[in-house]
Length: 307
Image (cartoon, rainbow, N blue to C red):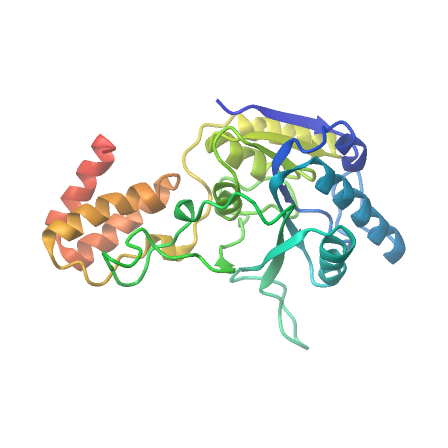
């Protein structure tokens, strides 16, 4: 059973209470300094103060990470270059990936191009770090028994929809992140019972994901109203994560041999849809349309037995 340890207060002060080299992964969605209203505070500092704030919390983040640890940081376009400079040049951390979170809806513009992505920097504390590729592979378009039947590397462009206001899991928070997005980070960079730290917990997405993936988690949050909201969310029944990358439901096009098809499709559900109950029905529908009722029944049997 995962232990979730949530604290209310200023992130930099709370960091001081964390032991050196004790955290496996940090997943952070700090304020972008765009003037958003977070209830008891506004995300708007002068340029110099924002850079100082970023340096302060990132310095603490490096201190508390284990030598094998990883940090993921969400950031908007205005400050991401400064963030990169702090992590690589000033803190001496190891750059791994510049991830692009691509979404289908964003700000509308009449002059210039509308934003359709956020950036996520992935750095490690050393060149020896945890990365569980098999836990985050994505289905390939064509089945190849001798070439990664388990799936392909997801790459650094991730397509997840925003958590829209009609989504039953939508919280009263202006920058809620999709659970499927955080799920990939947690699975890739930690193992069960590891400790994940979210210094800007917001709506509690990272804590909720860790709770369901059997990772221990520590969260910091400045707004006491969000603390209450997160605790309510953590006590809700789990019915699957609220988002999934569309390709996870992809059915390979060349599964004509029944013995290969049945074996693969059962494993597909286990590998790619384990925490996405709502997407399993969509997957089964595509399977039925592509390969017929017999395959649909096999998939049904897997859901009932779990083997």
